[in-house]
Length: 164
Image (cartoon, rainbow, N blue to C red):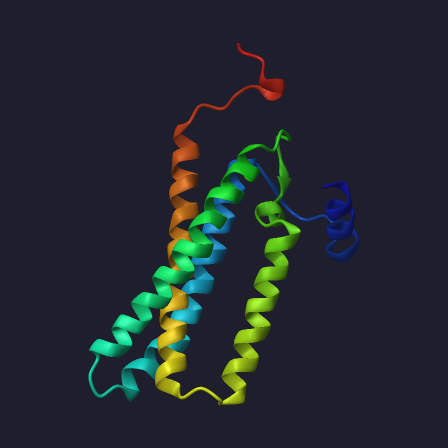
C-alpha cells in the first residue's frame, strides 16, 4: 500500500482521504456512473435497430447475467472485504480499487473503444452487448452502495480492535 500511496502522491499531489467505509460509497458511485454511461451508449443502438425486441433483450439479459454473476458480484464481495479490513482511520479515496482492478478497468475501456471504433460488430449487437454490460456495471455500483449502507449501520470498532 505504501508504494501505491507514494505513486498517487507523486502523480496527483495530496489526494483526498476518507474513512474506509467511504471507499464503498466512492466505488458505488464510480461503478454506477460507468454502468449508466455504457448503457447509454448501447441502448439507443439496440432500440433503433431491432425489428423484434425479444431476441436483443434476451441477449442483453444474458450479457448482464454472465458479467454480473461471473465477474462483478464477486468483485463487490472481494473489494468490500478488502476495504473494510483497512486499519487506517482515513485512506486515499482512490483505494476503492486495487491495482488489478484499475488494470481491468483500463483494459475494458480500451477494448470497448477499439471495438466500437472498428465497426466490425453491427450496431444492434454492439448496442445489445453494451446494454447488458452497462446493466451489470450498474448492478455492481448498486452492490457497493448497498454495502456502504450496511457498513454505515454497523458500529465502528475502535482502532486496534480494542473494545471500549
